[in-house]
Length: 228
View: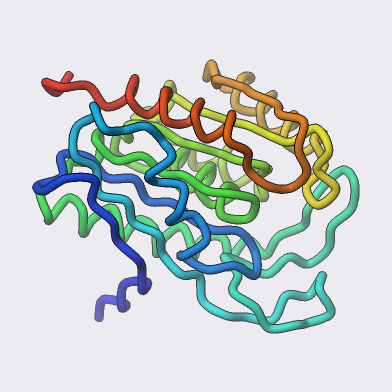
């Protein structure tokens, strides 16, 4: 029996989208968090894109005292140098994102025209799902985030996404996910042969207008017309 798809907000920049971006929110937020970013990306001259903002399920988060909140997986502990995530939960969320990718395939958008994006814990899932997806993706956007289970990615990384384009960015004043964790993720994917476009911005655990403009420019470069 197929599990129900995650509920999500959808926004299309024009009719008949040729591309899709599946964008995961951070811990404790929901799919509406990044909807206001879309008009600021400067995509008026880009092909039609369907943005999908799924809502993570609510669950107790151990590192937050067991408080129930929207989360992509349980965080068992965290400190300045790492996050210990529940690997089983990470796999469940990865499978949920794979189901959304499959629905886009069924709606006429092949995997190679789908970008996975995420902020903070959502970016951790974007990294994990993107690097281990069995079919080629258009790219990965990883914002203020980290790789929660490097051993999982090492074991299950796929040749299809061995050189998938990556946009990775972090705030230099981030006191929630320290910059060092973003740098570790950057170095991890570099060691695997990727050449991520890496940016830092003078901001806390958030996004800024300069970053949004850079994401828009990167997206336009990954989504050519006619199709590559």
